[in-house]
Image (tube, rainbow over all chains, first blue to last red; front, side):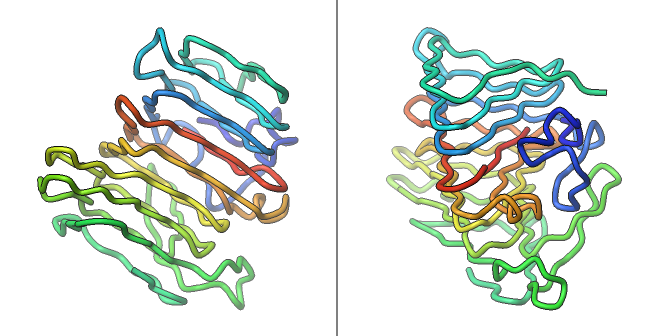
Length: 96
Length: 164
């Protein structure tokens, strides 16, 4: 995970923050859930080597609403069956 | 569990057995150096991070059946869990709520939260830049809501954040 990626600056990341675990030294995370819902101004960032996956791939729904954003950095994976993009943004951000 | 303006650390080997809901109320919502609650440092991957609450032990249902517990993290501070969360009893489930600008880091371990995860944040952009309202899943941590649990992330004004 590289939350210091300048591409994330508009989302409130991209700058040094003493409360954020930075880069590869902290390894990766794995999330499995039935459905993932983003609303309001929320942001989810999945870093290199990390993944977020639906419990059942043929049922999982990723719902993005409000002005929320889902970020998959290079090397990350996200697997859901249905994407409901009501608003907000979905993009792929590389990092150094 | 309310450390207030103090800092609290529960070391590994100490299991926190819960029979229902539990509220972890830590920090005081201030990030100003003069007003902020006390912190303890924890080194993670060579990086030193300050937390108001550190729980290295396992949070468990003690294999009791029909435990239905919501773990609420609130108070506006910074917490770290490294020992995992498990519910092995028949029909037992834990859920997690992160609210009130509190931040939580799940580092290492397995976090089974079949009741689902809810992250809400009603702070502003500056609060977020100061690290509030963030759920981080790092250092090989595995979060699983299992079949039946969802993850919902919501913000009223500006971005709450999740990252792994």
